Length: 93
Image (cartoon, rainbow, N blue to C red; front, side, top):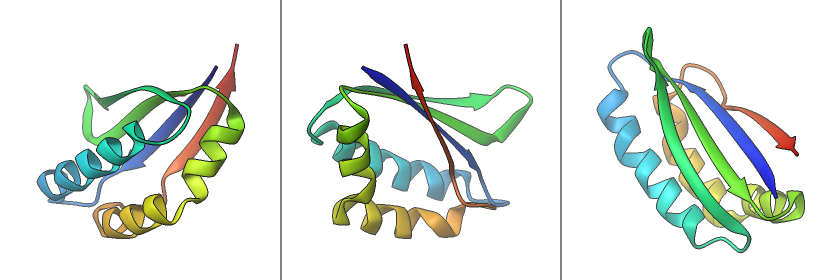
């Protein structure tokens, strides 16, 4: 099992719009082969900074989802709500 940490910095006044798109991305990820779980957090001192913690069975499962046309389409809709491109970190035990 691997853990994926996705860090996103939201653009000004985009929190509500981001939340709607982020739910769509997470709902689609649940259907991805190898998906185990996903949680979303925001920094207590900076609500415009979000972290998603995703558990996947393997790095290959993550890479397949990350490169999928479905995720690419969803992320293209999410992109305008972000100040910067998302930062993705893969962790293993």
